[in-house]
Length: 291
Image (cartoon, rainbow, N blue to C red; front, side, top):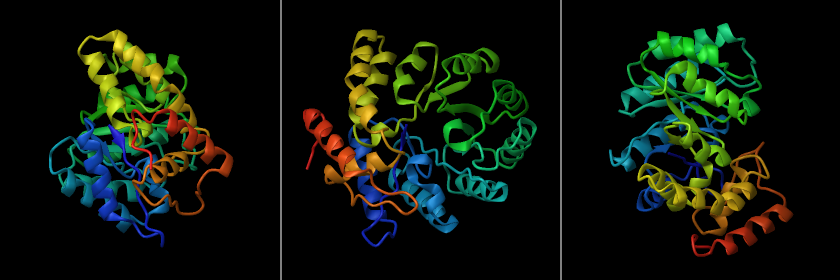
């Protein structure tokens, strides 16, 4: 699943035409599913109205061709409820709900937050655990409680570098629980332990190879999946040398896909890192159409 960036015009307005073009680029290159307004989509820089509009535009463009699971979480509980209900109303296939950031709620508060959200809708919920950006980790025991008590909490996106934690998710939530990697270098290893797939920011830039890695694994071609894992590693590394999605937007700008614009307080990477990104794209020219 590609967590799509939110393209902006030079005047910082959301560029819905570019969003549609990016979705077509993803689908043409084999992406299995699409999310918007997750971390890569700069949701905290969007108004609630803009978040709904971005979700609705994506749903219209995708038009049922692949599953659609927008990010509906916020640091504000009522906003999360509102956006998750909107996702259901527009016919999204699932909603991805992040652990609230900045607030640092305890585990019981997290349980109550997610259970209340899940109980308010019928669509599947993918919990999004990214402790490096939320300052709190959703512990395995809490996730297992939610899985037990909320039938529509069907999986988790783990942007968690603690691979022991990730293993224990499947041990405690069941092997049929949908485990998605949000850490690029763990996308392949998570498949090896029974993960469902990945939600990879790198796939904004190189959707074909990211999708092919998963296709190879599903087809039983372990060697090809391993090869693609290592082939993508340098690109993965350079795209995370600054805070996501700044390097990704810089890369897409160099590829001629978007205006490389972020809203403050986010901004493009340093000139030095942009040069490194440019050099890396040149190395991957067999894979990328680098403008």
